[in-house]
Length: 234
Image 1 (spheres, rainbow, N blue to C red):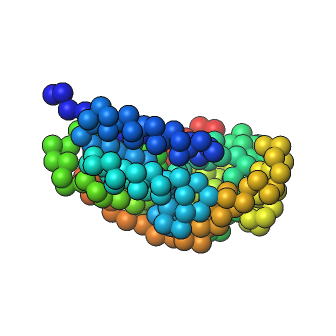
Image 2: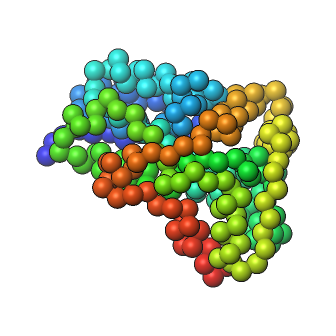
């Protein structure tokens, strides 16, 4: 009772580092004993690609703060299929995938240890109520699913569940960036950091860990669980 613990996460926006810096300073002032930060994939943080630079600096600020902390370096989320349309492919929506039977994406044939966001939430919750902060303090958990899979694997599973063909077409990263620029009405040049970030996701994220199970005591959910729950009956 009376223990102060904080979980924080921030969207990848230009002000990300400012926002997270304010949280860390406020937590330290309030004498918070333990912080859990949602970060991004290990390679993106370590090479400070795109918004990875903000995550790297925030992790450094946590180290300097004197507070106990844990950083969750999570892989790309399965649930991004529901939200990251321009990242998945030009004009992508879940409804469009089901209606048109096609997904065009730079993620199509690239393997990643895609993680279910619910597993990330359960890791964060377990850390916030742990009786032994010292077991996790100063650690960087690489949160992945149980297998490294491609977006094409996920789409094939969706196709099987809904009972109709859905194709997954590989898209060049430059074409994906152009599509994002068109969608958000911004210059392609302004997406250089995003391109670096996506490039690392596509080339450095073919791995898995047992970190979800280490913290929660339960293995990470396979993508098939998400697909069945989300698409059954559609």
